[in-house]
Image (cartoon, rainbow, N blue to C red):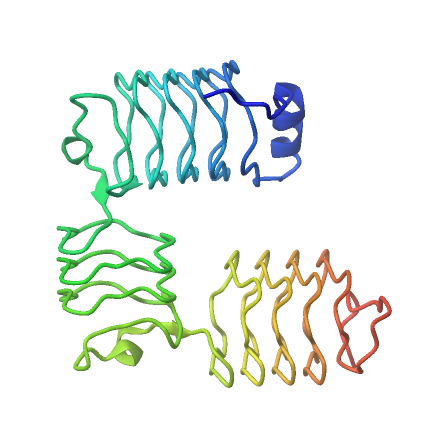
Length: 296
């Protein structure tokens, strides 16, 4: 298939990455030479990466969902914890590639004869055997994991919003601080509150919650109690925080682009380096105000 999308300049990519940018979805890096580079935690969803050279690259927890990596050179690459769901890896050279703890699903296409399970990767699917799986901070939103074996799985801070876990064995699983919402489905007898999950919904009690770096764009946390919460570098763009209690919360470096803070309590909250462009201030103003200085 011919691709008409222009190639991204490698130097531009590496410069943006060095400056903290991690979002590179849908970029075209066909045949690019990035051997030995560090692109860990980068997001390359639906990117065009045919015949790219990523040999010996450090790609820990990099998101390649839906990416086209046909014919890629991944020899010796470190993809531990990477997200390979829906990734096309046909004809890729995966000699000595470390994909332990990586996520894949039925849409992932591996090279002929490649055994992801034998490389300790995790199949994300109904009835999957994920006992003892290390799924720290895994993005499992909208995932169907019905009747899966999750005994002793480490789901600490995993994102389980809209996930369906009915029928799954969660014996001794660690779900502390996992994100759940009204559409997260557990068996009726499972006590999610006792398991220590965070409910992301209006009026929720999230006092002193650990939510640093959390992806909460567009969520409705109106009236929620987030006093003392750690929201450093959290993505709260377009979030509804109307009348939320943010007293003493740490929002250093948080993305609050277009967020609604109308009526929110922000006494002693920290907003250093936060992006407040287009945010509605507690007093209802839409002009930029200096929330970097804590409110009285």
